[in-house]
Every structure is written in structure tokens, then in C-alpha cells.
Image (cartoon, rainbow over all chains, first blue to last red; front, side):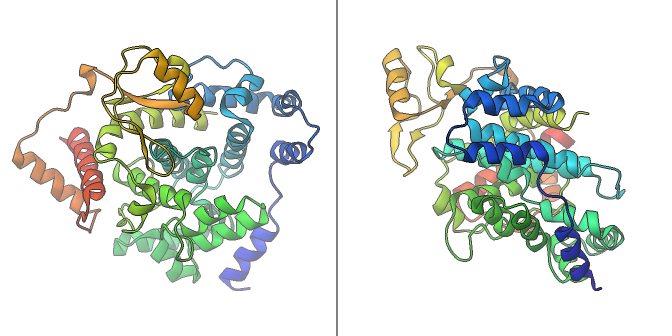
Length: 282
Length: 106
């Protein structure tokens, strides 16, 4: 079995989505489900419910300690945003087990991903995007393909990291050298397997290009810039130290006000520090 | 330094730090507008949930660095960033990264 076959087989044998999330998705598809019932499903896992309340009360969401119950969280943030937080916390938990590569620890990987999530959501807010509930999640799971390699080809991924170090190249290029595919392709396999929404699948597949197969896409463009911001500010570690050049067309898609990034830096770092602490705490 | 404030917490006299735009990029309210109670009602009607307001806080004042120090920071950044800013947004990103290095390493 060659490396790509090994990875495809690994993805195919992965468990389906975390239980609470699957139950939630099923419940929301039923038009008779009430928001109280949804809150009850989330609250059935006390640890998750507690973590969700900590995250929604973080300064990042702007409510500051006023949300006491999962029902209130659904009321203020909307069901989709809360569902996305449930999913993000489940995936972080799923992929932060015992496997450790010294040059690339899961905690640093997730810190980078959370940094991208925060930057992406802030971009969504400033450009006046009304449906921003997917922005945080899209940023958090954009690099999920790296975890596919990490999980199913750990020894080979150590070689990838050695190449990054010796050639000072991007992890994406080093992955292609070893596996013949990069994490955007591996990530899309997993996103498809988990039947994630197409908008999220697009960000996993196209966050390096900023465009979806030649077409503009606001969410993909926001994650593209969110990734660059997190790298510039050294929020966590994505596997290499390089800052890629933004694709020039994304600026037309996003229409970001002049001076915004410089002004937002401290707020973003503050939100990042607190959110990482809340989401990655045991 | 702008601060994101949810609609419920907007108080009379707060000033917008950034222009408020809709998803088509049209400006609904300009930056520097002093918010009054009537604005809160309008924002609610428009479905706006949060806005960026100005925050006057000394904690956020930027420190000045010498040109020499800035040059050293630019060299450090150049080890990781191999491109040149080509528009205002990219210059803004670059300045953000440079300021971060200055505060972190100098």
C-alpha cells in the first residue's frame, strides 16, 4: 500500500462525527425540534456544555459573562454558531490524544487554528457579513488535513517537518514532496467523509489560493487572510514559519477598510490569548 | 483602538471607530459618528448585532521606536515574509506584523 492509499484508507476507517454533534444535526433537520430540546442535547454532555459556556462568554463574542445556560447561548448566538462550537471542541478533543511529534505539537497546531478562526470571524464582522456563524469554525478547521497526515502517517510527517527545517520551505510544499498531495487535499477527504457543509469544505480545500477553483468566495478569502494574519502575529504554529503572499484578488472580494489590521492587532491578540486558554484547557 | 460592542451595550455618546457597511460595501454610517439612542433603533432594524467603537485607553498607545530598531525588526520579518506589499491592505498587514515584532522582540 503506498502512502496516498494508506491515508485514504485511514480516512475511510475514521469514526463518523462526534456523537453529540451527529445527534444535533439530526435534531435540527426535524422541523418539530424546539430550541429547548437542542439545548437539552448539548447539555447532556456536562463537560462540553461547561466548555461551550466558557467560550461563548469570552470577550471574543462580546457578551462577557452574561450567558448562563446553553438555551441562552442559542438565543444570543444562534443555533448554528453554538453547533459549530460543539463541533470545533469535539474535533480538538478528537485529535489531541497521545500522538506527539516534537517539532509540531497538537497544542501549537490548535492554537494556530484558533488564531485563524478569530481573525476570520473579525474579518467577517468588519466587512458586514450577515451570516458569520461559519467564520470561526472555518478558520479553526482549515488545516484539518495536517491532522490526517499526523494521524495516519506520523513517521512520514516527521520527514515532512525535517524538510521544512532543512529547506526553509512551506509545509505544503514539503507534504507534496513526501506524499504527492498536500493537507488541503487530505483535509477535503476528511471534510467529505464527515459531510461538512460545502462552504466549510471549500475553505479546507482552497484556503491557500483564496479563490474556489477560479471563482471568488468571501469565506474562503477571509480564511486565506486569517491564516496570513495568524502567521504574521505568530499565533500558535502551523508547521512552518513562512508568511505566504495574499492572492491579490481577495482584496476586491473582502473590501476591508484602510488601517483595519493595524488597529485590530491588540484586540485580536487579546481575544486569541483568552480563547486558546478556554478552548484548549483540559 | 476599536472595541467591538454588541448592540445591547451601545451607550449614547460612543463614537464609531470604523465605517459601518452592509454586505455590498455600502456605508451605512461613517466612522466618527457619535451614536445616539435613535441610532440603536436603526441598527436593530438593519439587523446589526455589534459595531466597532473608539476606545480611549492609554494601554493601547503605541510606543515609538528608532529607525534603526525598526530596520532590525524589518530584517527579522524579512526572514519569514518574502513578498513586498502591493496595495494599502497589504501595507497595513505589513505594518501590523512589524509592530508585533517590535513589541515582542525589542
